[in-house]
Image 1 (cartoon, rainbow, N blue to C red):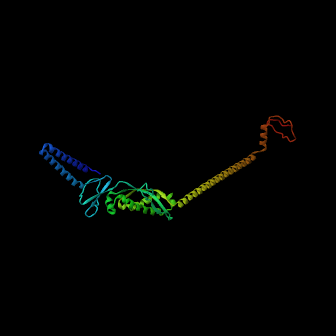
Image 2 (image 1 turned 180 degrees about the vertical axis):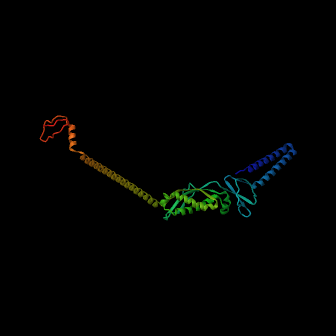
Image 3 (image 1 turned 135 degrees about the vertical axis):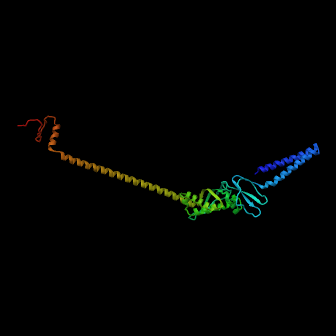
Length: 325
């Protein structure tokens, strides 16, 4: 990338070329005095350019979101202190600067050659049943700037190569530790989130000593042998049918219990009503006397003698009537 130093050098080079051109033209017109002035100016410009060219390798610029690794050319060692973003002076004869990104990056490992690195990068592991599984995963990570020199000292290569090599292998080992303890049906169903979380924990343990921080780990796709997937689907259908039958049986049981409770309530209500009626009848029979009967008959008599009488007509004693002789 062009820097302000490069721009300055290029400007001086242009000025030098213009000065030399002007010096030649001026000498043809004005004579030796003007030509000597332009010649001295051209020499001064050349001297300045030469000085800047010598100084340019002594200045290094580190991009934002990166750190610089100082490599000692003489012994091949790496300085433990990284360089932050900005301009830095260096000795071009004895040191070399290697930039490393510290911003978040995402590693995609998939079977689809159009999605990740352009090749098949799927992760292959085995389940607890011993069945082969292939997984498409992705991981977002950042580098700890303070540990980047040690990372470079260990691998001596760029971040992309480390990701496709060491980090990919760490992902495979972590997945095997977690997935290898679970059944396929559990991974596809209730334990998928748990598998992802445990894998990220195991992965962070492996990468933490190198200053690699796992920000997010995702299980994008899960592939198992077709026979296994068909068996799992059939099992799920049968479990669903069994659950439906169980719910229906429970519903019928609750309904029968409800009907029994209702019948018991009705029987109890009838018994209670009958007992109440019997008790009322008993109380009523105890309260009926001959005087009460005559009194009730007298209340209902309209004062007329019956037109037809029989031998069994009772004689009523009316209030206030005289006694018969």
